[in-house]
Image (cartoon, rainbow, N blue to C red):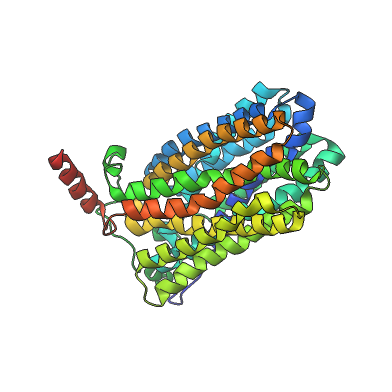
Length: 440
């Protein structure tokens, strides 16, 4: 084996980045085409919210199942299966003819796309030392931004040139291309032929140790731990804000500023491009603090608090009439969310051994998807109410005030729930499980 340290882990990070990009490209197509499809199929805001809820509720179920699945079968098989199914579902949107068909395709898309982050975060926990994990997660999370940018850049052109069905079909095909590279390039570090022993040793620095690779801890046991509920709460309170930005911003710009399908691209591209900066920057800041000697938990919490404050200005939307100022505030909020998310997704690998990361991320993903299932129902009711009053923009203003406060509330709630120390290994989980059982 070559004694010179290789950097193959960053190739793996690139694969994860592109998978996340495709994930968000596929799910964003419906939001971009919403004004067109609403007219063609006669959807109300509430009708559209139901389709969104179908996606998010199936995403919630899939999160719990996919996290457990990847802990059992491994990242290579688990992630490959998820991408295969969601690519089929993405293309399938082009074959449906009504709301029921869209709901069915969104259900399949949701349950399969849910595996993306449990698989990706588990892969990072296996391939990166703890001090680099937030940066790696930040980079792969930036894929959400690129996917969200690619959608408004490509989808309107495809829809205008070849019809809306082509937008779903062409974007769905990208996942099949990715699968080829995944199966050629991916393997766990311990078995990877192109990984030097130097890099393998570097990856294992600071990793949480476990008794074995076999998962022997139940979901119920994990739910008895404060560390699990800390992550659960963060996802529950903040994920719905990002979903709102993905699925309703095109409609917001259409109703507030009168932008049609061809004019939506630039504002959306600016907003979603900014999230790449926030995603990588948020991961870089906490990683830099850790490198300077900060405790991992303190570095994460400090960074997340600063990012939470950066979302607050979006609450001033009711007093802003200039579109480009609004684009700036939305860009700041979206970037801060992605930086927040990069650090939040790293907390399971901070608090748990890698054998349990997929399961914990799945539980947190379930929480985020549950919030994203309930919030669209509220969004639909609020917007339809104010639409009947002839002032739908007042409804958006209320929603932006809620978005501005969400991250501060989430940070405070997490601080109250957080345990005094991270879980170090599977034995610690078992001990805490036994302790809780004895107290009960």
